[in-house]
Structure formats: C-alpha cells, structure tokens
Image 1 (cartoon, helix red, strand yellow):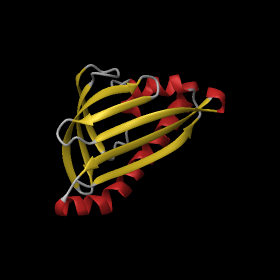
Image 2: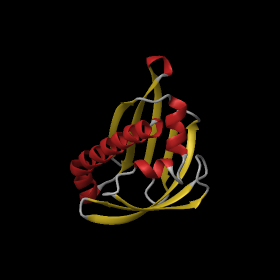
Image 3: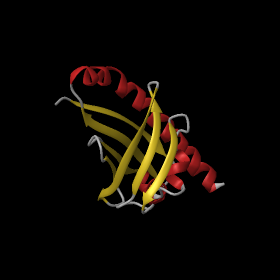
Image 4: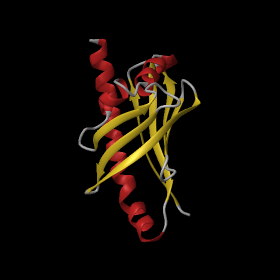
Length: 151
C-alpha cells in the first residue's frame, strides 16, 4: 500500500522539557494548542498524561467530520510522542530536538498512513497540504502558549 506523509516543523522558544510537558498533557496543555477549527471535540477516555492515554477526537477536514480514536505512546520519552489511530493505523509523531544548547526546541509534527484505490489517490493529492496547514497552526499555537505561560 502506498504510504502518505505530512509534516511541519518550527523552532519554539522553550526548552525541550517544557515543550514535552505541554505535548504530553492531554487534559490541558495539548488541548490548548489544537486548532479549534479542525478539532471540534477531544475526549480523554483513559489516562491524560503521556503514554497509555486514549483519546476520542471529532475532527473536521476537507468538508467531512470523522471520529478518531488514538492511543498515545512514548517511543523516546522526552523526545518522541506518538499517537496511533486505532482504526486506520495512521501514526502521528511529535519530535522535539534541542536548539541553541537546549534553550529552544525544534518541534516536528508528522503523520504517516497508508491508503489505496480512489480514496488513496485523493488523499495523496489533498491530505498532505491540509495536514501541513493544520500542523503549522498547531505549532504557532504552541509558540503562543509558551509565550503566554512565561507572562
């Protein structure tokens, strides 16, 4: 099956542990950076902090609304956070790398999934562009969240 990937990254003016704390907090921090235009509802079914968290998300993109169930893992604690779509197998990762001696962070959001047939053809054409825009907005929200938290 063809693999499709969409990604975006940005430098964030915060140390990696601070960014990690925001991304792994599915009850407040992570929810605060999600673009509301696309993420209409997020329900924490289990956990709420990092690995083992299970989420149900209602997301609207490309004119359609769908419900997604995700399970969170930490393949590299403190550096890589992963959200596994329990229905489709799509994998979204958040990777944090230190910049400027650890005073800042490079954050990358990437999703990989497989799709085939007519649906796969359509997704290969449109989905990466849409997801890159969503991730870019999420990264801007993260930068703003960090800035506001500092006062």
